[in-house]
Length: 252
Ligand SMILES: O=C(O)c1cc(C(=O)O)c2c(n1)C(=O)C(=O)c1cc(C(=O)O)[nH]c1-2
Image (cartoon, rainbow, N blue to C red; front, side, top):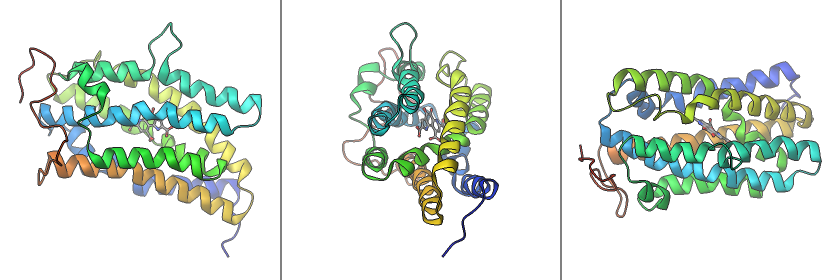
């Protein structure tokens, strides 16, 4: 039987998982952030990642429905507003659509989600099902990858602005607010997990939920790499470079 970790040890174990498994380490991100991808490959990333973005408020709505106090629901509701907007300011989903347009994709094509890779759909749907089917503690814990996202986001924004002539600050506006939102969200989730994982097996379940979520992120980048970098095996029905582009945009 594993011993119960104190709060400090437990947090260190969570951060160790990020250090070993977070998607900043994935070869596709290395290429994206260092300017090694073609415009088509960046389009493939934007198109597929839209599906992740679009399902985040769905998974947060499931978690919201499982929370039993007004304080917890208030906290979690903010995540949904961050992505959906409140009717006055655009939310994250609208900004991701703008990112897709900014890299030359046709908006209707992006929103329809038809050309996404099967593995993107399977990974993202697995995340939604996870928060529905597992304990509330595991559902909350699965969002803890956001502990590590501020670093990868700043690296991405800096790298993409530096290396790709077709990328502007406006195109990447989605990321402007994310580091602050992610810190607020992950601070809350971390303290929730520390307070509510009181037995060794609950701590292990939290650690496994974070490992699972790292796999969800990693698998999406594996799919992009195999389909659009090498060996370049695009599954039937998935987006082909040069298609789904905004009018006036030449394929590259
Ligand atoms: O750009 C990134 O690398 C990145 C990573 C993650 C993450 O670690 O799950 C999220 C986001 N972005 C993000 O924008 C976002 O809204 C988000 C929500 C969640 C979540 O699990 O609830 N993760 C992430």
